[in-house]
Structure formats: structure tokens, C-alpha cells
Image (cartoon, rainbow, N blue to C red; front, side, top):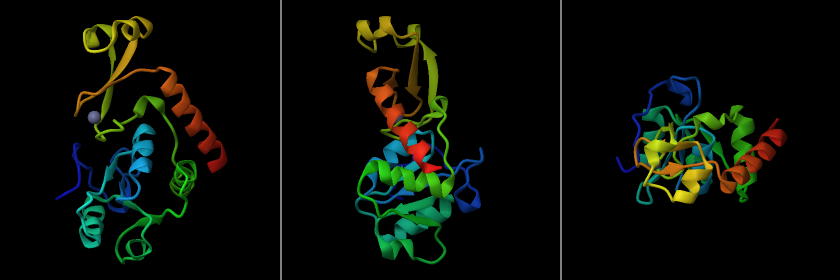
Length: 173
Ligand SMILES: [Zn+2]
């Protein structure tokens, strides 16, 4: 299998995870959309550059993921649940998935935007020496990816991201 799959996918038909949330597989052209869905907390894998259509469709079907694609042929394949993403702008792409699947945003449920790993909240003392001292001093809580170890905190970047998601959700209803 050529898909990055750091977390064990939960198997259930129809692209719905054990926790009731849909999971996704983004095609080669939708890497940015995959990262945004991870930030929103949705289990989203990203198809490898080298995977052909039948491999991608097979992975989506096997793992019960909803395929997100800009490829009409892939979208119309039988037996694969998919959403055709016609928009070019990321906000519009995200809005398409939000409205098709009724997605919500729980900022305590985010996944790692780099690797799709599950993120847990941790105290300042646990990341001491791993982030700049100025950042360490300004934040009480940090968020650590259980797979790749990337550390996140709620800086100005986070506020910008949340702002974009809020806009998308408001218009996605
Ligand atoms: Zn990670």
C-alpha cells in the first residue's frame, strides 16, 4: 500500500469512523484540503503520487474512506463513495466537504496536519526544551502528535486557521 497511514483506520462501511465521523482519502491534487480536514479533526489520508486510480479506489473502499477527488473518472467509479471537488480555492473545497458530510469543528479533536496522527494535549513541562523559551512562557498547553511528534500551540497562526474554518462553517450550512 502506498498511502501514508500512520494511524490504524477504523473499518466501517460508508466512510464513517468508529466515533461516528467520516474519514477521507484525498487524491493527489488535494493535499491542501487533506491538511485542512486533519486540522478540523477528521481522519484524512493522502494518496501517493505513484498510486493509480484503481489502487486509490481500492484503498478508499478497503478502509471505508470517502474519496475526495478532482478526477471525474475516479469520481464515477462504481463501488467507491466519493465527492467530486470542482473548486480550486481551498475555502470553497472545504465548504464542499463540510456541506456534503455535515462536518463540525471541535478544536480539541484536531489531527496532525503533516501526518494525520492523533494529537493529545499536554502541559508546558512536557515540551520544555523542545520549543523556544518565549513560546513556552506564553502558553500553558501544547498539542503533540502521537505519530511524528510535531508540537503545536495556539499562536497567531492558530487563530487565523480557526477564523477560516469559522467562515467556511457559517457558509456551509
Ligand atoms: Zn504528525
